[in-house]
Amino acid sequence: MKNLLMEEVSYQVQKTRSGTWRKFLYPTGAYFAEYRSDRYMFGLPLVHYTRGICPETGKRIVARGVIAVGRLAVGGIALGHASMGLLAIGQLGVGLLFGLGQAATGLFSIGQLALALIFGLGQIATGWVAVGQFGVGGYVLAQAGFGLHVWSQGRADPEAVYFFESVFRSIGFFS
Image (tube, rainbow, N blue to C red; front, side, top):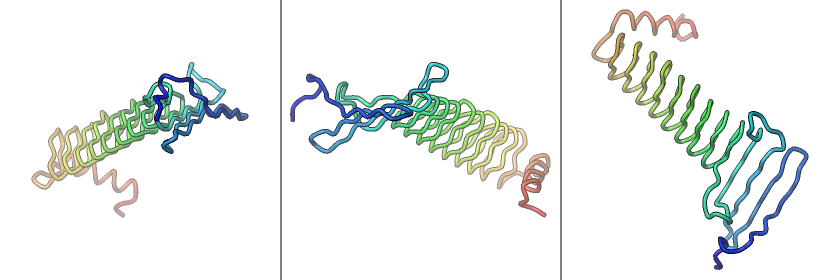
């Protein structure tokens, strides 16, 4: 197979009402696609989607947009294996406000490893309120927990019990 990095690549370009698709099918059957919306906010396309390896560079293109979707995504709402944004969803979700993923960060985060400032929910969780198998924070509900007020197998701080029972009662877990 020829090295495409040394040649001009001829993409299939499709212009739609909302944006432009750029596609390429490798001789091996591998597929590259990129969509960029025509509308911009804050200097970023409203939607940017990437898939596969760019034939010009031989690398993945980072999806950057208000809504960014791709293996690597950065934006307001970022969806991808590795994502970073205000709201980030992915295996690695680095969110400023909210992160969801196997490893997630944010003010609020949910994940196997949830590193949060305010609320963390996960197998390993941190946050002012942390709920998990292992938790660290201000109010902690965990099998093993460390923090100011902890409700765990080995410890039932009355303040933590009162806090979590009130939360559960307010969302309808207790009558």
